Length: 84
Image (tube, rainbow, N blue to C red; front, top):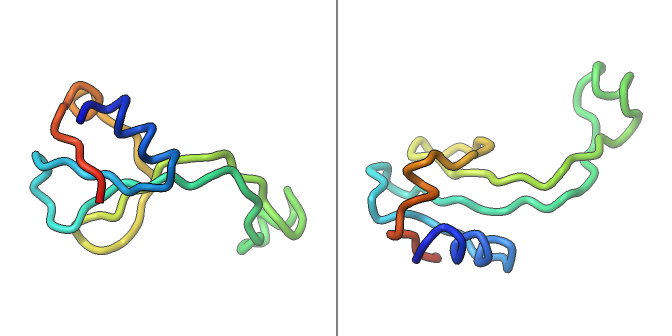
C-alpha cells in the first residue's frame, strides 16, 4: 500500500513495515498524545510530575530497541507498505 493508507492504518492501531527495508523485525507504530511521568530532574523542574507529549511515530529498530521516527522521501513515496 502507499504511505497515505499506511498512515491511516497507523492511526487505527496497526503497525506498519516496508518489504524494502533490510532490517529484520523493523516496524513503525503510532504513539498518541499523552502525559508521561517525569524521569529526569530537568523534566520535573520544567513540567512537574508529568510531561505532556505530542503524538509521534516510533520505530522498532533492527537492533530491537525503539526510536522516534520520521519518514524519508523514499518512505513517503514507496508503495511497499504492509500492516503487521
